[in-house]
Length: 347
Image (tube, rainbow, N blue to C red):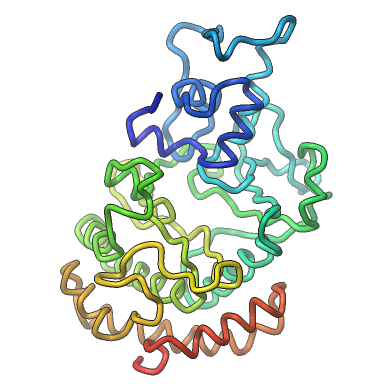
């Protein structure tokens, strides 16, 4: 039923998986067959193709209906990116707009659709990622576009909301070369349903410190502080990744999935322990020192990066919050949240 964790983490989760499985006429728990459908356009440089030709292996609970074409399985390929939000791999068309390719292969952008559960998620993510870039975090090219401007989306998508968030794929080069990436659920060899467990931010920092460069350590601390300040409770193992630009040596990947979750989930806290706690209002200088010691990070690098991030964030937030395309309740929630954070006063 399940693939090994490394491969399992390349597949979609939750509602998105269920949707794709229904489109492909396979059972959502049969990861082997979902991989069969989606394997040509997985995150990173890995591709999976059938060894014995293209014929679909029919099973009792996955048989096609009478007269149904095997091409039905190809309809799901455009949804091949791992995650839980409805999102598509898209290409830039000749007019400069975005098109969802018929077979879903070769896209260089990710289109993330509005949520049918939470209001204004695309606007929220665009705003938080824009702010992250202002703070000095490595962010790919992003945009906020009208859903109606994207060609080849399934019918009815516009009923979810008017805007979609788009982000350039950092696992694809301009010449369509695939760049290997792996998220930290893959690094730790755990299934996606354990992405909120099995490791802390200090554990992730330790890997980054031992496998990458000091600037990546600083970038990790910068993102940790930033996501605490915006109240992002969803920075789990799959939202931290390594990238291999030369195919061999890892770096911390560009940022992705920065959303302020506290407007939607009252009392939300960090997805992972910082070192000893998940509470945003308990990330203070002492907790940062504990994280630095546990991960064997240079204390001065951690404290100076954290202090700089807090200072720049507060300046940029106060300047830009009235101009970002987010609802006023998001601004009010973040403003109230910032007053509860000891790092804002201590650093």
